[in-house]
Image (tube, rainbow, N blue to C red):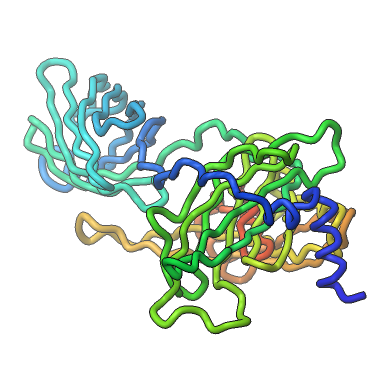
Length: 380
């Protein structure tokens, strides 16, 4: 029996007959889930690179504790650090966020005021921008957000299936994702969260959104589903070819992520333990759940390197400092250790410490992301 046939049989067992359920009237699409808005709530460790004024040439440290209510663009908080005149500084902050532009105003003791406009990075983890104060100093203001407490994506494996049915009247497709509990734990649990769809090769679009929120499926215990409308490209899709749509379940506090292409059946993703730093590298244990033949996995380490600031913009590039691929048999787990490559060793020698991003990737989906602190190998 072929691997595809075996996987199809596993799909039927894991998801409890989802293909049969698909023949019934499908539930209404879940409420549309808009892309999450950027939010700057958290603790930011900032550096003021003073260029003009009494502090020219100095770098002054500060900590900003910011809050931003969900759905609001207003920002408030407190600042502690060192003022340009060398005195301890404590103050309050107000501001607003528009897209990735953060406008801040601060008020400290003895009439001290400051203001600036900062540009938040795409991942929301740092900013670069301007700073000027009532003491006639000006310069570059950079900050990095401290990692907030992480609500871990759960370790129960999930299984996702995507079915796309043609709507004859419009020529569009209704694509329904069905997500089930792929673990052997008892009792089974209904997955929650969202599914994000992707038009492979940018062929076609989704309307009104590419994401939907899961709801429990009637008459199908332990399975949740939601739907979106897929509009194929001009000319349609050739007869007999799969609908070029993939779906990714983003996981929740109980379940790990999983991803699949429309019509391929369930694809069960592996899970990874918390990563730990080892001598000039990092390691994590990856588990491939029962029900699949194997899980192809790549564990990658990378850092964001910043060039010299010549203006308000900072040159940035992502550097891969280590990578290792492995195939893990179904129902087994494997410890994977990634050592630094030549680029990583050069950076470590230069900086003596690296804050690296570890990613575990399987079936084209990042199933785990974590920051690890890498230090040089101790001699002797």
